[in-house]
Image 1: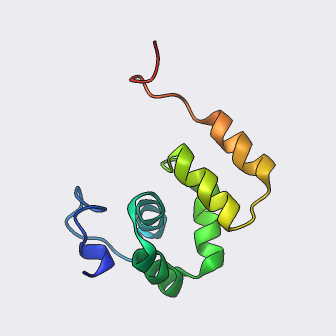
Image 2: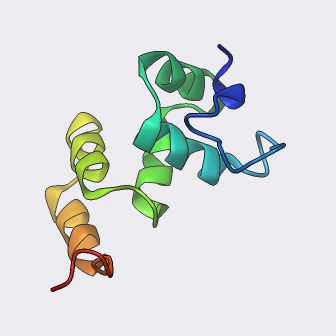
Length: 94
């Protein structure tokens, strides 16, 4: 299935502009996509734009952020500080 038509990633979106919504699309692919979706993103945006998306994203899960920081060899201090700035979910607080 074509990446942008997958309801598992874009359940809440009817239409998207590949360039205008690049950050949003990259974030969803990095959080919920598979290997084919990642390859599509690399072809559509390039590795540098994806890496930039990782550093700018506010929606990547801690698990995804950790994985992609390792994958792209991003300075661990940048990733750790980004994880520490994330506010915990209301559901995870006791």
